Image (cartoon, helix red, strand yellow):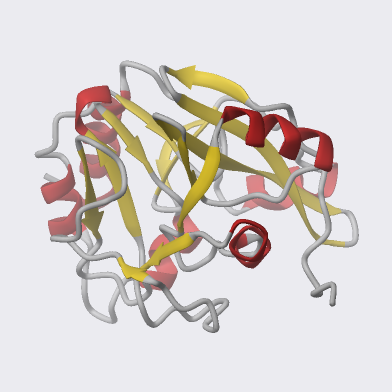
Amino acid sequence: MQKNYAPIYPHDPIIEIFENIYLLRGSIRLGIGLSMNRNMIIIKQNNELTLINAVRMSETELEKLEALGSVKHIIRLGDFHGLDDQFYIDRYQVTFWSQPHHVNYPDLFPTKTIQSDAIPPIKNAEFFIFEQATCPEAILYIEDKKLLITTDSIQYWSDWKYFSLLSKIIIYLMGFRLGLFIGGPWLKRVTPKHGSLKSDFDRLLRLDFQHLVAAHGTVLENAAKEKLVNVVKKQFGI
């Protein structure tokens, strides 16, 4: 029986952004006149594919995905995302990775639990956990690529693709601008009362990275760490 999956929203074709790492820029409709972009990352190792921040795509694009390899893993890095995970879990019978105790889509139970000492299904990679956050949020760090794959915590926007006019106005009034930033609504939601995530960001900045791609926005190459250092200083102070 067909499950009540979310619809297929407009999206770009799959493109390769680093060797054996692919990006699907998609979108989501949040309400009448409200839409924004969202991204899925695809990592290929031998003939196995891992999908991160899953976004459902058309059958034509799914055929292209399947031509790349066999989908074996889904990684859910953030609490606000997960809309299309069930579709891929059912279609490909994958191993599903996430932290436990998600507020959004709580019925998506991991077959592999994301924690700081968990070994990801990606070579030369590790999970970074926001330990102070009140909702689950993680980053996948791929050491040999010097790449951070994030969800809502850190984002880089260089355009307004897939944003409706009303969404642009609302998001602008909320303080969003093009460039690298820590997600404001995310930070407000996950910061403990009378607490701070500064220690988490300090730990993150000890990693050796240059590039970043998030669940929204575009790819930031080469300047991710230096830009994040400045953003963290501005957000939390030195």
